[in-house]
Every structure is written in C-alpha cells, then in structure tokens.
Image (tube, rainbow, N blue to C red):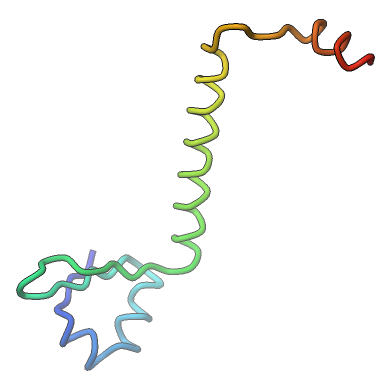
Length: 81
C-alpha cells in the first residue's frame, strides 16, 4: 500500500488517484495519523459485497439458532400452499 501525507496528496492528487487503481493509497496527517484510504471503484465494490455477504451469513446462522423455528411444512400449511 502506498502511503502519502495529506499535503503530498493535495499537490499530486491525479497521480495518487491513478495509483489507487492499482493498489490502495493511504493518506496520513501529522497530528491525526491515518486519515483516509483511496481505492479503485472495483476494489470498493468487491469489499462492500464481501461485507454484505458476511452479514448475510451471520444473519443466517443467527436465524438457524433461534428458538421457535417453523419447519418448511408448517410454513406451507400456514400460508395455505
């Protein structure tokens, strides 16, 4: 990962945005340390999908462990299907 200061990023913004298409670019600031990370849209989309998938898996596991679950047959009868 490339790491640059905020002032470096400001002075060469287009270069660092181009670099972010290949690898994340970390932007740092003296007093605050790590301030931001610039990534490509493709990287962002993949990361977001992965997080959503993890949330779905956790939700499914929690649902499987709930008490009072209804079987498929019971649901079909309840819905008159």
